[in-house]
Structure formats: structure tokens, C-alpha cells
View (cartoon, rainbow, N blue to C red):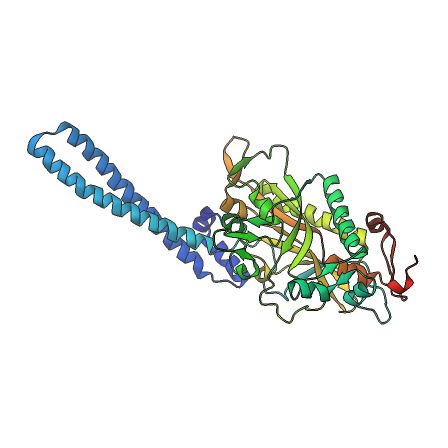
Length: 423
């Protein structure tokens, strides 16, 4: 959640951020009113408690009728304190809810919605492919992807990666894990089920809560859509040591998304599915280091994309298309030949102190005082990358030639159709 001090000191900044996002700036005034009511309720309750304490001292010194009168007054005062505490609790809840209703303050993102991104750079040149096949046609002919049996077993938007398809994904993710480790990330395989306070703390139970799978009844756990969630919860309620610089983790996990509201979109193949694997970078740092860390995460993503050798562009995502936790987000989108457009492969977000404030993750400043940490995340590789790899590296004979670096992790440099395989 946002810093209440900023809302008090510079409400116009927060209102402007809300407008950039296309969200209600009036929520700022709702929070300010709720905050004033909470502070007034605290003063009222503290005053009554102080009066009650003073009365208790008088009772100890009194006797006879005077003591009886003071005791009677004490009972009345106790009821008043009880009511004041109840009002304070209600005011606390109202202020907390109002604070959680406001998204993170946008930092430098362009205004507008999904189509108002700004292209920062193009990397690589799409090559001419005569009559390109899409990734599913290639995947099926190469024996890499089986959508039909995935649907038979689990329903629509599920799939099997088979044979070299499984090896392709494992090689891709292993390459990401090793590159991350070489760059100072600690590799993690986290839980994929998390408690409500962790899912909510990372901001995924707001506007996009219908995207999340929930195990209700006695479990009350959520399936994660990214390992960002458990990695953010890893240091929940802790004071972490950032004296030697940022803490960087790379989480390798299976991810789950309901894709609610996406019916009819990308139903063919593995672009938009309910289950996929991903290596996600996650960083804890001091707030003043967050912008620089954001650029580093983008650089590591670009290093991975260079290894799979696909044309892509980097975009600065508009404020109205940011998740509630993100202050700024950069996406890398790869060229997809059969669609003649760019599609997202990576996303990196600077969440500033928004998530850490909710999750109570702090560090000690130079004077030893606890401060709220900043968090960032970024995709290092995921199943969807197979789409761009197959389509951009397809050959006229239906085979796919893998880039040299990726091929070393997959164990082969050419994926061949069944008809071309030799025994």
C-alpha cells in the first residue's frame, strides 16, 4: 500500500497518479477523511483511558460514600472507554481499507491505457519467412506440443509438452537459472500455494482477483500466477540486511492463471494458458536503489532474449495498464511472424515500497532505524517463449534450428519433424 505520509503531505501527487492510471482520484479524499477520523478516534480513546487511569488512582485513596461514587463513575467511564475503543477499531479498519484501495504512485510511466505504451527500442530485425507456420503447427509436427490430450485430461488451455518440447522448456529455464545465478541471484524453488495475506500483500487480490485460483473451504490457499508472490512473502514480517546491497532471488515455479475475461483470445496454442513454468527474478533493495535495480533487471531480461535470438521491442507500459503494485513497468515483446506483431515475453516492475509496506518487510538505515524496503520483479524465462523460438527459427523444411547458446542446454541444435527423424 502507498505511504500515508505522502498522501498527507502531497495529496495532489497521488491524485495525479490516480488520473494517470485512469482510476478515481476521489479515493485520495476518502483516505484523508478516514485518516482524520482515525486520528480523532485515537485522541478520544486515549483521553478517556487517561481519565480512567486517573480515576483509578482516586479510588485507591477514597473511602466511604466518596469511594462508592467514584466506583460508580468508574463503571460509566469503563463503558465509555469500551465504546471509544470500538470506534477507534472501526476507524482503523476504514482507514486501512481506504489506503489499500489506492494503487501505487506511478513514477514516470506514460498516461493512458493498454494501447498507450511508448516504444523505447527495437532489437533485431524480423526475417522474411515465406508461408510461416504458427507455433502450434510446428509444435505438433515436431512432436513437441499435444493440446488435444491436454484438453482431454484437464480441459481447454491445458497441454502436454512432449519429448524435445519438454527438453526445450527445461533447457530454456535451466539457462535462465544459470544466468541468474551467475549474476548474483539466489535460485529458489518456492511453494506454489500461498496464504491470503501473502497473495493480498503482493497486490493480486484487487482488480485481478478473478485471475487467481483459490482453494477455499478449510484450505484457504491461493495458487500463484508467478513466483513473485512467494518470493515477496519470503521475508514477510522481517527486518532484512541490505547493508551489502540488494537481495536478489530467482524463483523457478509452475504458475497458474484462470485467464478470466480472456475467452476467445489466444485460444490456439500456448500463448494464453492456465498452467506454465517460469523463472522469475525478484529483488529487495533500499528505495533509493530501486530505479537502478529496475534497469538492471531489464538488462538481464535482454541478456536472456539475446540468447534465444529473437527480434523484440522494449516498451514503457502506460499508467492505466499497470498492476496496482507497480510504479513503473517495462515489457519486452518478441516478434511473432504468423501474427505480424509483437507479443509480451518479459515484464519487469518496480513496486517501490508498495508490497513491502503491506507485508511489513523492512531494513535498517545507516542510523539503525527500521525503514520500508522496495521490491522489484522481472521475467527471466517462461513457457510462452517457446512460441517466439519456434516461429522465428523455423526452416523451410519444417525443422527449427535453435540458437547456439540455447541448443547447448536443450541437447540438440535442430528440432526435426517426425518424418525427418532418423533412427
